[in-house]
Length: 251
Image (cartoon, rainbow, N blue to C red; front, side, top):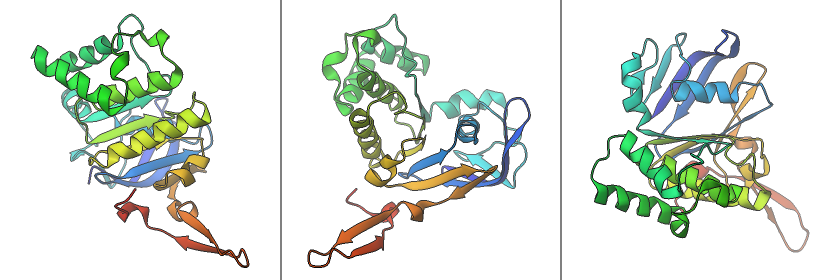
């Protein structure tokens, strides 16, 4: 298990309790949505996953087999190298080309061989279908293109988990759908994706495990979304079949 929270209390930086007794679990290759109103605790929960905020009150609070209760700060850089983090505002370096943005990350995480760096950059740009944009600057790209580069950056070190905070928040519906399709494809390689979103239609278009932050609690509501409507031609009666998408091999 990549993430295992049991009865964890989640606090904001100012000490305000936002989520109480959280049970939250992530396994390899899972695609997980976290939904809820603004201020419900979604982003705060994510910040605990990538060690921006501490978790001290919990029965269990493990991320990548490390207990967050009393986690020493010196271990955090190595743990973050096993993660990819994607933000709504892309956070690309504006004074560097796409290639140089990616090269900066690789060098910062210990890559030294120039040929290996070049090959890895080419690989991730191919994965996100942005090979021809390597020499462009962020301001020369559309929002969707910038987010694809942000995803390329997130997968550079072949992470076990990608954490995405509203990755489609600034994108039009069609581009948002393409970004989620790309993230779903990444899970087929075993990487788990945990993302917050307000774009509820995506939950039906690209089913996954669904959690909701509400009234200070986190609840799993997957079965409310992972349904397929089947219509019979003669009488148009609707049959609802619940589907366990976590075990579907064709998605």
